[in-house]
Image (cartoon, rainbow, N blue to C red; front, side):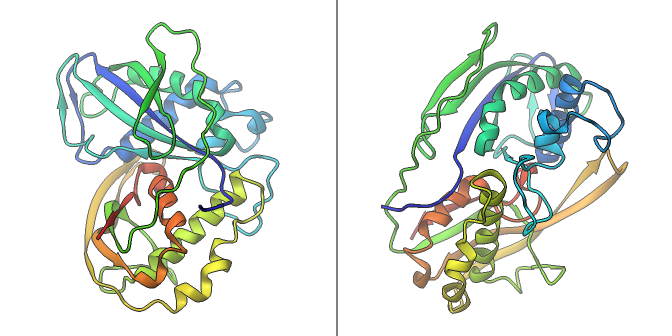
Length: 316
């Protein structure tokens, strides 16, 4: 029904089992990202340099691809000088918990483009992360299974790796089957949405559905430029006039602050964003429906690699 030029998206589920007591903070996105970055770097870094700036191996390095520049070395991204990482974390319901020894937890990871084939590196990263520990007291865990969604949005999972397995090859991404567009939708923001307008954070009082859809188009354009054909997807250019003409729509939003500790900057940082829901004007459907549907898996706004900017499109 829709022919959308966008790189493949694959969703993975990493199941871990607590080896001791694990106390997780209320929101674990930055915790998991920092831990996995450390674990992956320790697993793959050959020269052991303090920074990647002078390393000769960055074109081939999994850590550099996911946690430094993001884009493939052969892609020119002059239109988007700030590279996006080719992954997002899916951690809904994973925080604010205490895991007893043996209790399991599923960590979702979405990978975009040909970075999907770097999956074995993530298996090693999760194993190494389990030895490093997470949360208060650095509770340790063991990776027990990795599964992949059979097709984007299907919510059926195929095991790829279990303890003791000698391989972890991802499935070839299936063609995306977009569901039929509903007559109307609400967007429910599941994790804080952080978007800026002219250098200032957009608050609940300033927010419009058109602003959200603008940032969605920009996000998908950037990802297509970096991880697809190397050219922008043209989503914003194609829908600019339509978005600029959209009427106001009902919204029920609030600002939510949360704090993370940055090991790189050695300080606590406050990261606020919007939560709640808003209605998408009927004028935006069905033309924008495939982009809205894809964005549920790519996320929108700042700090998507922490799992921020997650949303769900609900008919109604």
